[in-house]
Image (cartoon, rainbow, N blue to C red):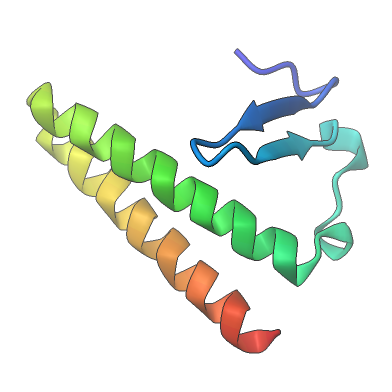
Length: 84
């Protein structure tokens, strides 16, 4: 479980560390386009892995929704790369 008052730090498979600020300090305006691109890529990676896990476990509907989330994250990543 994530403590929303303290924030979190996670490491991606490529070794990058993603840190989130406490919820009270988060602001959409404070996130740079580069950070948005990285975060979208990280979410795409995580949802792809979770979708595969759900599929292997026979959780077809969950696998479908996670695949949709992956596609959205990939589209967001491409959009932010183009916009910069």
